[in-house]
Length: 428
Ligand SMILES: *Cc1c(COP(=O)(O)O)cnc(C)c1O
Image 1 (tube, protein in one colour):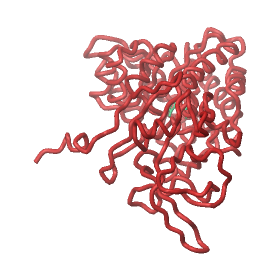
Image 2 (tube, helix red, strand yellow):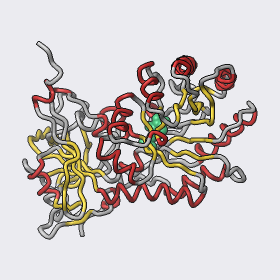
Image 3 (cartoon, helix red, strand yellow):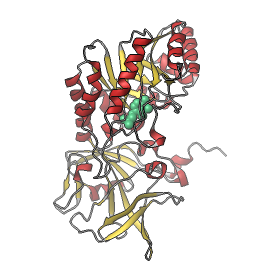
Image 4 (cartoon, helix red, strand yellow):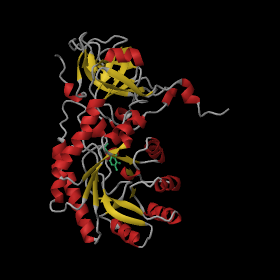
């Protein structure tokens, strides 16, 4: 089979009897015809397997582990139900993500609320829903939450988000645990200690643990180990009795063949090696990308092309930065195949352009493909995370549908937007 990058695709990827790409037993060209393009396809088996891999692997190393899915990677009602079925918790970073969790009847004692500027309304909503933990990011939020909790006569258990001052060597836009970051209380500057002291003086928030998040994707293991040690030391030095600790998420996946992220068990080993003899401490890990990334592929129809002799050939697709802003936002790289030409040899080097009115809207640069014709179906793997969840209506382009595939059947879990949908909020 001529399929060198199959490792980037969902587990149930293959070639259908008529030679097309197939995912979860569904011919991708048929899905394109049935549901239209651009289309996001999630393989249910891969998604559930990833949930189980994280839970089982981490618990093998450290039984007292809770796996909490980071909603911002991609959430909707069907996905919230799936994560609940798999026994995962849910990280939310906004009232909107919390509203999805509520609507899906996600158990409140499995919900964690993150973010560097939670509003009073959002905090009230979280307290009213009786969520498990608010992760306090800054001084303003601590006093705000304390006063909200006081009004409602409850004591809110919280984690304190600290910044350990560790650089995970990822893109500067996705680095969060360094000194110069908008997130969390810096240990280095003494502000984390100040936050602990401040909390001691408040009666309606109670720190039960510490949290940090290094950035994403983190291909190295050492930053996790080092940061865990720094944060555990910080707890000890500040006489803070904690029962929970979270190193956040950020576990890498491969988007291209040359990327080799650590295995889940390597992350588990690196993180839990710092917890020897401490099994009363609950470990909370928050994978997002590594849970949903590989289960998703994005498919597009090929349209126009522009050949600039001696320079570059651009071939355009019917989506782009509106449904996947990662290449434009942080030079993210992808690979792709042509779903209806899986047997063809590569013949030309092209750049795949999106349809949005920005020169930076290029999904792939200088990649070898078979000869492309209008109507061909381009399939980009590892597209489940931070693509549909960051989608916009830029250029008034409706956002794509999302289908879940399993056993040769597809189920729409988010329908394609219509032009009317986009105007539904407009008043004249
Ligand atoms: C974004 C984020 C995550 C998830 O990151 P991934 O790279 O998707 O695993 C986890 N925790 C926090 C606090 C985050 O901000």
